Amino acid sequence: MAREALAAAGRSAGFGPGEFPLAQRIPKLKGFKNPFRVEYNVINLDTLQEFDGEIVSPETLRARGLVHKHGLVKVLGRGELSRRLDVSAHAFSKSAQAAIEGAGGRITVLAPAEHGAAWGWVPGACFGLGTTAVQAVAGLLQKPVS
Image (cartoon, rainbow, N blue to C red; front, top):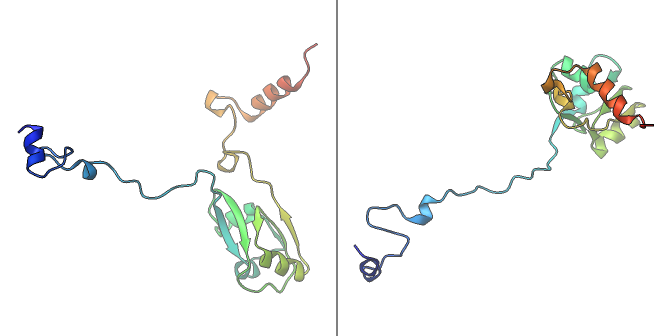
């Protein structure tokens, strides 16, 4: 069938005989994913209230299975805290910060690790270099050449 015949039949040029319409063949994108989004593993004050010990860090939370083993940790303010805790995390909500300091505790905001460090990635590991070899090379690069 010629294009003139298609136009005469009331069909668009994107539809040929026996074809699926062009608008339905093109994949549809479902929204927008922000590549710079920071996702946190969250823990609430009511969980910290039941935590054994006075020093709370992402490592101790991971060791007890309270947060996922990868990623950053954020403390949220749900629940009550009635005892003193020294809490280290990557982020705190305002209500959690006020509750911890109100109970006599201290907070320490940790800097986010370099890209990949939270997952155990070591620069140069893909080349079979250990951490000490990478540190030695980094030290050589920082020394001025005379």
